[in-house]
Image 1 (cartoon, rainbow, N blue to C red):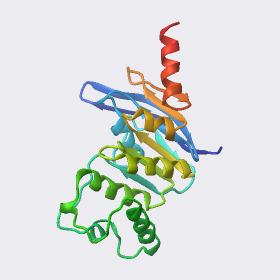
Image 2: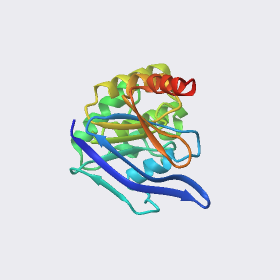
Image 3: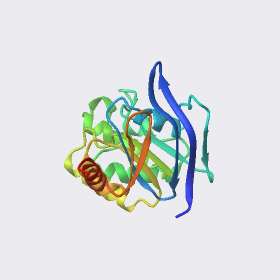
Length: 214
């Protein structure tokens, strides 16, 4: 599989706390990657850097090997409560995007004319996912996409990602979701180091157990 993204020597710290230091990795086109680490150790910071919303402290380089469209799902979805779903997520001039979004909204049992203020937390997350997935991006970056989802929406998302042919990076505390959606693990192992493992979350967990018992 061709290399999609090359990252070299990027770092991030907050005061004396080093989240990661001079890390480097390649991502291949079509990779499905989970980013694993305890809270507060750099997952969201790395995602923000890859999405172009933050910069490495040490310079380094982030090089996409072709022109790509990036879509970033943040944990908190910002919206205007008085907007309808259509007003919130439909652009003015992208008919194909709107068609994809309407189809996903229908899968999520949501109607474009519903007001954002009337939605539950799970429904707001489904609107956020609709906006993300309808973009048909080359690189999906997803920070806790399963939060507030019911079983039906979760199963739909798993099936969507299984069929998605493009590149995905996910942060999630749902190990069962990761088992069904990813094939590579990036894990922060402490001291600012990023380790890489092939396989899903269970493969990673078993590898860690075996290394502990050596």
